[in-house]
Amino acid sequence: MQKPINRVLVYIDGSEESIMAAQFAIVMCKTMKLELYALYVVNTKALEELVKSRIFLAQEQEEYSRDIEKDADRYLNHVKHLALQKGFTIETIKRRGTPFLEIKNEISQRQIDLLVIGEISKIRSRRDELFNETERAMRNVNCSVLIVKDEERVFNMYESLV
Image (cartoon, rainbow, N blue to C red; front, side, top):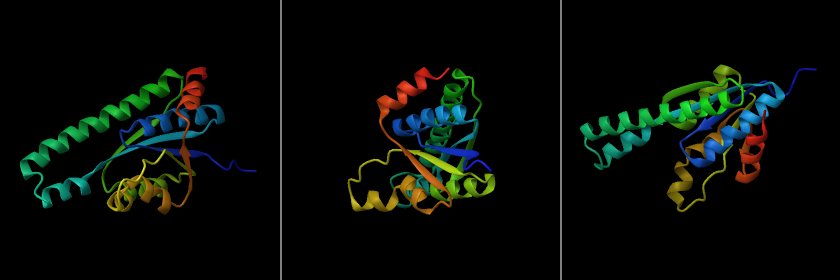
């Protein structure tokens, strides 16, 4: 019988919840001997909306875009370091675009069996509900989704992993 899960993708968005999801994914994948990928998507759609609504000028968009690219690299390096601390290897991926579409694309291209995400933030408005990219991905991907909760338990599992 084939294993039900071989490849796992954890979505990193820079939130504490996504880092906790990465820790959980590292524990799970090392323990179960699974492949693990971490994806960060630079949200170009959001950048374009800021320019359209005249919150940013084009020049400011470029500067902000560079800052987000640096953040993406920093978070992916942090997750890679978390894995290496536990003697595990993770492949990191950075994409530009609309997050939920890029997540769907990576899942399809890499034949991912499980998407791991952090707890979805509380919805403060109808607009938040419509534009939460993580939730859109959760609802639209063609694989199972695991939502990681219980920060203290995850931290303890990660710390005890040899």
